[in-house]
Every structure is written in structure tokens, then in C-alpha cells.
Length: 123
Image (spheres, rainbow, N blue to C red):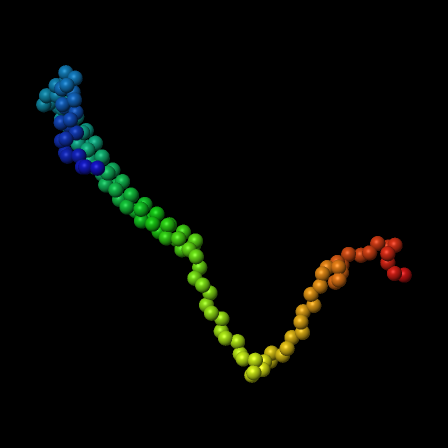
């Protein structure tokens, strides 16, 4: 927005009142009206400056927020290539013997841990 000049608001109000049939002639009341218009002009101009600074700050913070969201939701880089395994000709590394395969079974084979009814128990 454009800045309002010092007496611009007073002159606009004076023209408006003249169109309604009220003439503002020089005197104590017109000086007070001019002072009030100048205070209002200063307040409007200061508010415009504050709003402009707040907009710049808000845009900066919003850009930071967008960047953090982008970093959090961006696809992850591919994992690093695993180190090559030792060759089979050299045998297992020291301290690493051959492990037994793990027993894998269903729940029925390994048992559920629940007790049988008394009628089905062995005596």
C-alpha cells in the first residue's frame, strides 16, 4: 500500500465535508481536527510498516516449515552396499563355527502350553 502524506487525510476530509455543506475554516477546532488526522495518518503508516515486516517474517517461517516437511517426507537414499562376504575357499572366520539350523515347527508340533483336560491326561 502507498504511504499517506501528512495532510492528505485532512484535505480529503475537508473536501468531503465541503461537499456536504460544512466548511472547515481556520480556527481552534480545525487545528484539532488536523492534529487528529495527522495522528491517524501516522498510525496507519506505522501499521502498514508493521504488517509488511510481519508478512516477510511469516513467509520466512513458512518456508522453514515447508523445508522441514520436505526433509521429513522426502524419499530416503538407497542403503549403502553391504561389505563383501569372505570367500568360501578360506573357510569360516575364526570363532564362527557352523550353527545348527533352528527348529521351526507349528504350534501343534511344539505344544501350546495349555493343559489337557483331566480325562485326557496320562495316569
